[in-house]
Length: 267
Image (tube, rainbow, N blue to C red):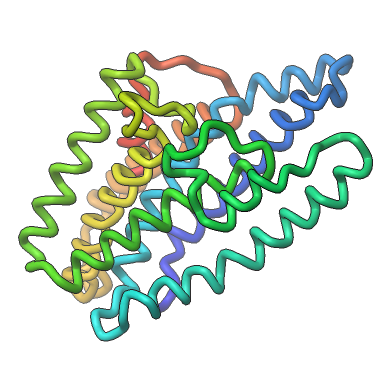
């Protein structure tokens, strides 16, 4: 599959946002540069960056559909995912182990076992102190595995219905239960509804429908000839959404009562 430049550009923006967020957040947590006003200002500007994770969930759903092959087995699908993900995880775990000798971090064996089992994004874990960012991969892996299984064994129209109801349900629950917010992946409601897992279900579900639409209409899209007026309108819409994403995730700390506005902009 040839690369889609729009999506590659969005991935780049998302990576920059996530890196800035974790860089300033983690340094602040460990007390580094605490006396530098500029650094504190940069943290406040980028603290909304965590919402870019939902963009990556959506993109994961898109790529899942575009690369889905019903001919491979569930085990082959999982093996390919783990081969790609585990080297990065193990490398990060080794870094934690090495840096634990400096006293800046503490290597916790129990946390890393949970990481290896991909459980730290499922609600089964209260707090992950090592490689906590892996919660995203954990949640994504479980949701994609379920979606893969359903597409292989269930009629697609029922899968579409299940995914649509799941997306609507999880986002409605998140917005109502968290007062309009969708962050804080470690929080779990009623002992089972984990915020991180629900974000994965919602984002991947949306990406599933976007990818499915694109896959069914790719020839029409690539061969479509539109008027100058339509090009200008589409360009304005893209620019407005892109400006909103960069301005609110990387440049300012603006508070919106309902964070679903970010999901709409990502889509």
